[in-house]
Length: 368
Ligand code: GLY
Image (tube, rainbow, N blue to C red; front, side, top):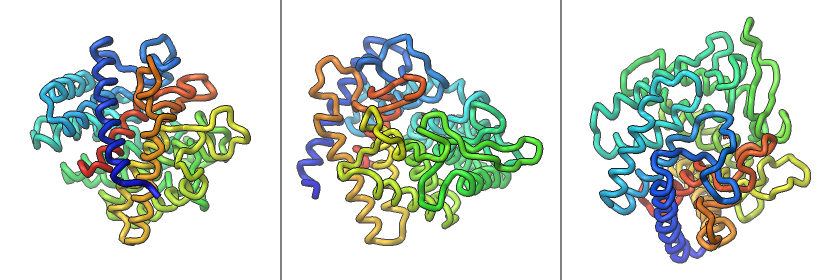
């Protein structure tokens, strides 16, 4: 059982530490968007694979501004949001939710400025252009025949654009994408596949596959947490109870298959993994579970999700994961994993891990 008062102290300390780390990063490397550390350092020549992380640095600044009220963080948050504005028409990636929900949507929530909202809406409309009518999914960045579980974390911005503009076709696209993902990538036990491959001529679903997990039929941890969180968001917008059930199925898989400390390996099915932890998945799960606790109609399950999220944060704010006792480490959260097969960001800090960790800490502190 987590000591609640002690955890709240650890959450405040984690916010203070993150504020120092982010400030040190942007003062040393202004306007630079790192994705993962190498040996704990953000600046290196390692490849990106794809460009999906540029919202998470500014996103941390919006959270830090909300936490501190400091004009410094407000200035930086607006500046780093403006640096990604041009991506609202980027048709090369499936990640516009990641880019704009963490930055411009937080800005709009704070200000209600219609010009800021327009940017979020345009990003949502751009993302919807990836929809493949035959297979009824938003295609991933790798190929037309590919659907990623990760897109569940981005489809919310299409629902949002649909809601703001009363565009029924945008709403249809978002809903069909979620139903296709649920049918093809979420398994009966609540585990998820990373990728689905489709026949482009007929739209037929062919097989499950993976890039960052162990095998096509295995359970890549981060992908499952994208589903846990993303199906919850889809339910919030659509009120389609099938999406809430799916989010809860994924949550139950996570809780049943993860050690009591709450941090999974990169893939639950990989025998004897070289690294025991994927801390970014734990941070995403914690944040998604705080959401599910509010969405589920069942008080016992709500308590269980919230208690579990607090347990995860108790672990992540400890010295094994929070880098505050690791001299010279530039990230916030240690033991994250980006792309093990490619050797990118293996047992390092990852920018989205730091972002979702701060988001979860913020929720534990009652700020969102
Ligand atoms: N490409 C998104 C992820 O690594 O989870």
